[in-house]
Image (cartoon, rainbow over all chains, first blue to last red):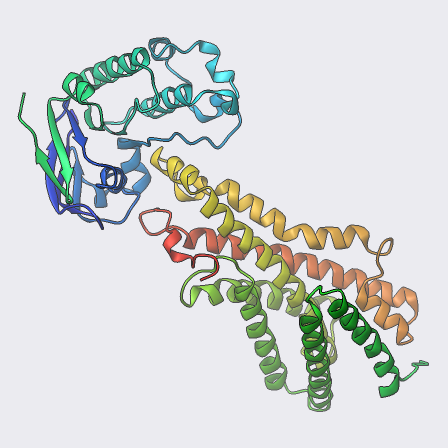
Length: 201
Length: 267
């Protein structure tokens, strides 16, 4: 069981805001470009200084060492980043073969050169790289931004199963109304630094 | 020892070469004649001054005066490291990172050499202490400024990669390890090159000076080897300390990459 709770949470551009994502819940955030969605996710992952407090499972961010917090509350950036030549070098604990297959990637993907992967392949691999750390909370910054319709659905379905099996909390930034309708239990618009909840389903 | 003493006239002849070079640079519109003349004038004034200071110092070898000159040399070297940075740390850190690391490495290596290797009496004897410190400091300064420059540039360029590693739960040390390693390697390139080429491609300046001043070549070579090793140790340890120190300073207590602690280039 994992939940994410923000209190008086504020960064330079966003907040102060209070919001929580329950275990096994997916909350979507949309907003115009520049509204601070990415900055909000970065601050929750404690990559940017912020005021207020974030709790994961009632443990405060400030009470945990930063790397441990970031393993539990994992940010998947919109643009994936790679520091080694081979894809496999980025997977310390190997990769779940079933997950690879569900994202339409062959087992040989681990031996691929990062430079030769397409943007979409990299995005799916970067998601798996984070999932292999088994985070309790996922902060997803447009995780299907570079994917076609089929692969978008694959990622959505994998994330839905992950959320239910691990009782993980998902905070998902998306531009796509259709996607928000498919994946979110609740959904907010970020505007003027504040989150406004849209009609509950 | 049969030293041919140089007269002001001899030096003026050499200065003509600089003037000719400046004239050519002006003629060809290369635009470096101003810098060339200013730096030539600067080095003349600085060297004459240090000659007078050393003359005074040799006459009164008091540890206080030796220490004072050492501190002045360190402060100037620290400033030089700072101004050579494209992205230096804001506030006092810009000066402190390089200066403290040079203090740790150059001073320790010089004192070690004076006490254990050369064994001068007294150990702070300025004829040995000041030239030795000067050579070690000058080279360490180069290594540190190259290393720091590379580290901060690399961190700024690889910001997204470093933050993505942090987001995967890597600690700050691990997230910046590649940049740190590369920066230390770059800082040590000049001294490694100098050691490899010594004697074949280049006759090091110190040895050449000693030979010109009448020291038997084998004695001069022994001192040159000593100085080379001391310089390599000072540069290597100094660069490691400075780069390590700076790599830590790039992150805050929550291990966030804080590029706002660097001045943007050109600011």
